[in-house]
Image 1 (cartoon, one colour):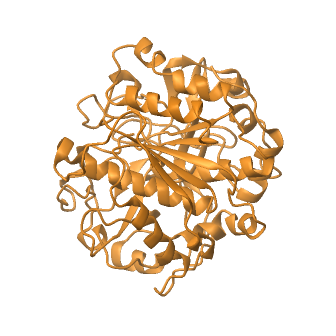
Image 2 (tube, one colour):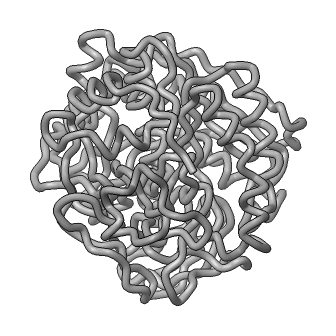
Amino acid sequence: MRVRRPLRVAVAAVAVAGVAAGAGGGGQAASIAVHPLFVGLPEAQARISPLATSTCLSALGIHCYSPGQFEKAYGLDALHAHGIDGRGTTIAIVDSFGSPTIAGDLHAFDQAFGNPADPGIPADPEILHDPKLTIIQPAGPVPPFSTAAFGGDMVLWAEETTLDVEWAHVFAPRADLLLVETPTDETEGVQGFPEMVAAENFVIDHRMANVISQSFGATEATFPSAQSILGLRSAFENARRHHVTVLAASGDEGATNLFANLSCCYHHRVNSWPSSDPLVTSVGGTQLTLDDAGNRLAPDRVWNDPFGAGGGGTSAVFARPGFQARVQRITGAARGTPDVSLSAAVDGGVWVYFTFVRPTSPFHIFGGTSAATPEFSGIVSMAAQVKGHGLGQINTTLYHLRRGDDGLVDVTIGNNSFAGVTGFTAVPGYDLASGQGTLSAPAFVMGLARAGDDGSGG
């Protein structure tokens, strides 16, 4: 589930590229930032203004979505209209390096989509109120921003940071945001994780957040051993003790994932950590089909387009936890991911605004499960607001919520096969492509809040 380093893949229809990499042509190998996935068509790569979904379809051949459409599609508008908007809670967002322009970019994003001037883009006035944004570097000072440093990874992490901050804010517009920047480049294997663990422990020990959003991960097989993963779990164990909910993106390569050299991909099914950790809630990806106003034109399906697919499968490190006892016929003896899924498709990507590169054309379209993860952090934030305190571990609750009454929405279309590796097919009930499915926010938030802290884990 890489956000950062470019990798080489063949894209059949259109090229996808990270900002720091050149766009390829149709049918050619193109350098892409795996996570977030960045639409690499030259006309979409950096725009002066955003487009309506219908215009994206006619001009770019993909769907693109703005905050106002998700207000409608997920039922966020009903919650926000009643003051259930994350107020009194804090979402911690953890990223290597962060972004040097995030405060100004978030404000500009809010103004652009809170009351848009562009035709066909519905307004989301809830985000016109800028949140409290605090930036900390508890694991050490971040190096000065450079487009060339770390092989261009500072740019890719700044993209990731922007996506995380802006879309956590869309879902929970009155939640405080705590951006936790670390000074090292997280890559496959152990690299970068010790600093992230130390930073998360600082946040937890100082009771600074109710939920932690992690849009990063590494293939389990790229770690030296299972023990090396187990040795990095202290923040998650600490979060369990302090009733903090921890989320992680399930990945963008379907049932496979990247090699240690960051090339794509293992030729068999693999999983990634921390998504595979039972102390973490794993967030997978769906594809929405919406009109310009945000009305659904088709049921949500498992994200699987030419650019990537929602991560999911079974862990090679963690045994099936107790909260998955009801789905053991699907997971077998292992921990299965994801647990729940939200919008992540590139053909259905979300608008993001940043100015750390190409400031005169600041609008971009991103996808990936690192969009779904901050989205779900906003859902957890609103449930914590209703509850009156942090929810802690929510996994047992997720596996007991009812479809329909408690806002769970089954996903029964699609699969997460990718890069020649046969994945898993969505079926009624739990599956290894969408988890428990997706959600309707009003009932789901209330169901999550009623249940509270389950203390589960593994």
